[in-house]
Image (cartoon, rainbow, N blue to C red; front, side, top):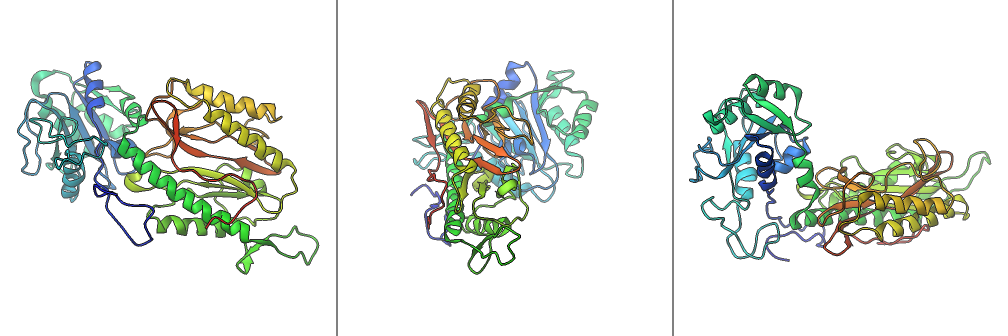
Length: 460
């Protein structure tokens, strides 16, 4: 290991800091210029994944704003710091009160290039001082606006636009994400701005940098560790004796009944020890509840029924992992075995298509065709028996983001997507197998390998 990176294979308790991750704002600048607009504005809080991605500002639970302006001609307030290049593209974060220092650290300092010869967090071979722009990796000079912190974030964004654009535009055109809050949009329009929606942020988020892929890989390895714990527990469990003769016996483990909630706790304890959060995304279904795509309730786990485990922790800098496996304890080789074989074949067929230039829909189509060949409905509706969802979706600072393998467009290097075919029968159960893959220059890479097999084995 080096460069201050953490080692997720280290013993529990050993912590090492990751270098700050920065976002290249060049695509946003280019989108503004291509649209003939004057600026880009986003407003939200720490729960707005677009804004968190753009700023890497993780703290505020109240609204703040980001303003990006090509070739700004005046300096914004920056806590006394000036970057000394008034002809640079500029980005201003209107931080809420009591968060200025954190914004300076995460939004400004975190975006500076390393100049120690060890490369920056994008995986470049050398540090890059970006002549004249105070060392910002992407050439976009950043500053923190601290004036009028009691005003609405939309008002503060409008003031920043007026200060930076000045009289160069009588009625400035602002590009905004589709998710901009209504009240913020009203403030911007009342200040004399015209708003135009842009998908530039979603497009930029879809292609991951080396640093982002590193974070995703770490989260996925933690998911694999949680999966290993769950599989081990299932392998060690035994059927309880049916003394009444009226209820199908459940499984017991470590002296007590094994339920989906208990198994979920075992997984989440491993995730916590690995330094990631379960984020309420540890989905476990057993028997009929395994056909519920997002089951987080408490059900007994019984022999012969499918146990579907979908583990999606949130790790460093907010990036997610996403892994699913399905097991059966003491199965009889009926529906669940046929479904497992079909889903495994569909996964292989889908993976074989993942490479640059392939239409995303092709990946889904191959998985669906394989499931149909095994006799499962590839176009089942919600609550029906068969394949009820898409083959995969993008993963990043959101658990579901672009690209969709059921949508338009082609796969490109840097896309990180799930491959997750599945079949379900609401009266019986469900089978899904899911991995996280990154599209590379000549194919794809699975970010964390984990074994397959319907019969659980001890993995720890």
